[in-house]
Each structure stands twice: as C-alpha cells, then as structure tokens.
Length: 125
Image 1 (cartoon, rainbow, N blue to C red):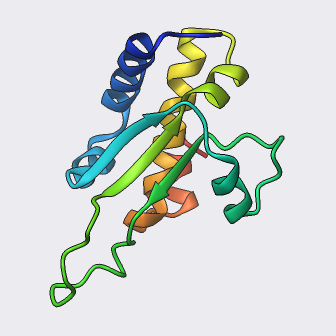
Image 2 (cartoon, rainbow, N blue to C red):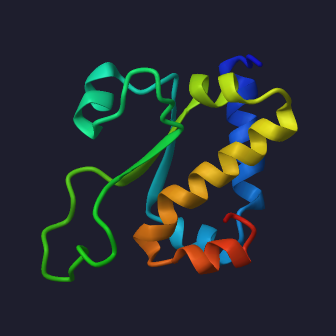
C-alpha cells in the first residue's frame, strides 16, 4: 500500500485521535513527526538489521529523567513514525491506521510508565 504524504498525514491524525485520552493527554509536549524511513545510520546505532522494519521511535527523556532543576531540553521529545515500513506491512488503510496507533502508543507508553499489562487492558498488547 502506498499513500502520498498528505494522505499518510491524515491517517496519522485519525490514528492519533483513537488513542485513549489517558495516553494522548500526556503527550502535550511530545512532537509527532513522520519520516519516510529510518536512516541506515539510525538502524546501525540501534542495532537493527537493515532488513528489519523499524516502525517508530521515541526520542527524548523519560519522565524519570525529567527534573524541575534540569535545564530545559534543546529539542522537544519526539515520536517519529516511519511511513514506508508501515505501508509495506499493511494491506489496507484500516490496517495502516491501526498499526500507526499501536506504534505511537508503544513508543510513548513506557516513557509514561505504562506497563505491558495496562497496554493489554487498553487493547495494545
């Protein structure tokens, strides 16, 4: 499946709106960004084989690392969604939106301290 950038951005918005409010509300200071695919350098840094798809990435400090006394971060916390790997694994727009939703939730869940058990209760296990 292949969407143009505008269509994919709309799919990301729809998927984001389906994320439970208890997660979405905590993402006020997190930027959601779409990239075509992760760079080969990023895959190497993360220890990913080049043929293993990386669907998303959280870049920033966890809540445990945030401190009132720490200087403000230079860049905002960011969730990267990688369009091409998601499109390659999905056969329909419905499936794509669900995978985007799952990817965003998983990228931010552990940052927020949400464990696997709660993710399962929310339907993301």
